[in-house]
Length: 233
Image (cartoon, rainbow, N blue to C red; front, side, top):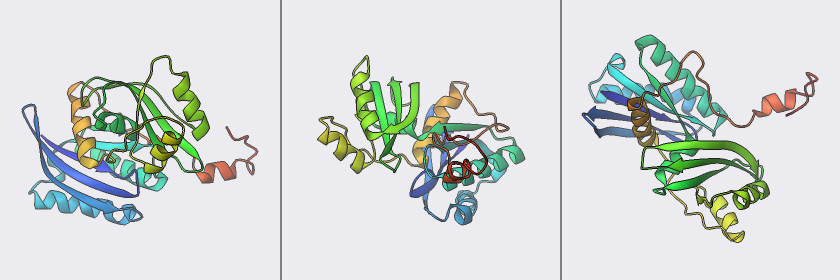
């Protein structure tokens, strides 16, 4: 089985092609995609990767995609491309939360809290029970102020290990007396591997309702709400 992994959730994205042989996954190639060029470069990058590996789009057995939270534009582009491929070639899709990938990539087990910089002095966070490198049970995902996140950690019934790929978040947590190791941000290869694990467990997305996991509304929605007479949530 060939597995395509796609990540456009951050400032730099990537595309990966893996091959499943039995229970083992072999990484064939990983290519980066510059942030700000997702609309122009994602499809050509996927096409070039498949061509170099001598694979047709219809030969893909699974697509794993980072579903957010993250870049609004990047996530929209990726979801649109994934839907197009899935519908054209009847390829199953597994959407993977960026926060889940961070928790799994941390190497920690037990109760794990993954944190991402959401800008505007806010934090995206996800709380999971992690058992092994490819199994995470989500407890919650949300967005809050940095102060609110620290309060959330203090209020956890069970002490949670904290991990983040963002140095700014780690530094602020350290100032608050909380240790949070800075880890590498997951790339397309990581999402492909997690997607394959979920797929083997019988999990797959319904492409007709597949959408990005934004956790926060876009600026366009927020700023247009008063004009439409809608009270912001």
